[in-house]
Image 1 (cartoon, one colour):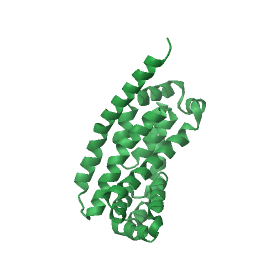
Image 2 (cartoon, helix red, strand yellow):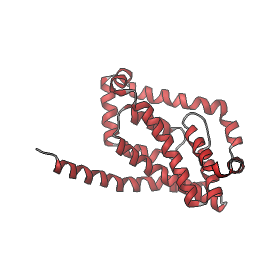
Image 3 (cartoon, helix red, strand yellow):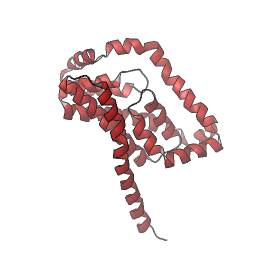
Image 4 (cartoon, one colour):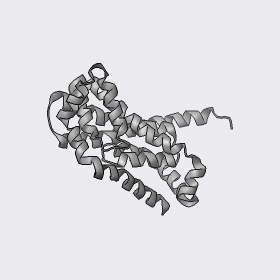
Length: 218
């Protein structure tokens, strides 16, 4: 039960900035405004964009608008790489911050029973949860925090994070580079590609684990 309450509590915590600054941030970083803002940084526009995507962990930054602006400024490939990298950094920050609490603090926070439930959940289905959640609002930060709190294996988390973040970054960078506005198709691609990528990544992890098991002495 504590696991559910922690999830809800994180949801409330991340919702508060949206209620306070959401409209202002949406206006300040609309697609056109984000392009103008990034262009003002000239050769450092990529760093400013990564900083914004990183701040999405604590502030209601419209990340997809920033990713689209990156596509307009740098093109679909470079813009997509920067957008994906910023999203991955933000996810890893949330994960790492909560993982640093350590298992002792996590058990105290969740209780032994719910901690074990969380560990089992993110060990079995964590890859799917992380990969599929990246295109949703608010949920990615909560999922990354829970993955860190329940000590999801770093490699598994990183691969799942990449599976979700890379399609998101490249899809919106492409939209920004072409000047088109098709949020429905962007959402379909951002939600549909990550599960396919995670299937491939999961096979890689399984093969890697088999090789390690074979090498380990009996």
